[in-house]
Image 1 (spheres, rainbow, N blue to C red):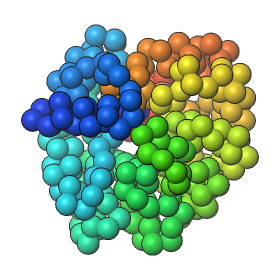
Image 2: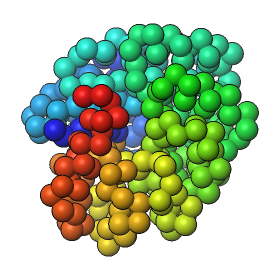
Image 3: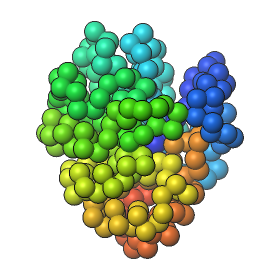
Image 4: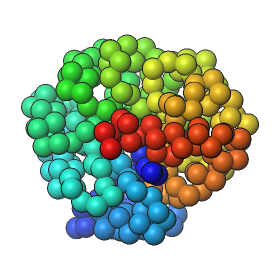
Length: 264
């Protein structure tokens, strides 16, 4: 089984506009599909990827319900596993978490840069604790974001401070634990009870660095991710094959660990 744990898509009526805004912000060109759920499904099927975890983000409190309505609407659609999102400034974040759980959503996405909070800000502790108590998976954007200037809201040392609040519930730090902060990942996160996804790493990180981080952290805590529609999961898979992992380790990274987390 192959599972891409880091994909994005948007409702059909806004997909084109959303892609244009992200291209303008980040200068990333040539998305690999049209940004819609159907486009993502087609891409995954064409590339023999069984599932894509769709990471939705509420970038402001007003968006929260609509973003989560969209996530819920994808439940049961072929190949798509949607995550919801809550915004720290939304007064009804707790009710929204319970609504998502009741609907069958399995995880929550936070993007500290887009949502304007620091990952170790203690005002987030009650939200993290509620997420964990509901048995939801938490995925964080980690490290720098290509489209947002300093400050970095989720560096590895801050992620390490926040991690104990989850009391062992599954937490994922995207982009190999912290985009472009991989020395900090090695110092502060490797070996801890946290998962890294591989989103947007191919041709951005030297394979020896990835090989070292995987050896320190354990292949069983690495999840294939791409950042679709901006990067191709088959490129990320090729990159990982170049890191010298054993067939059994690749099976875990490509989908075995993800399947366990998602109950598939």
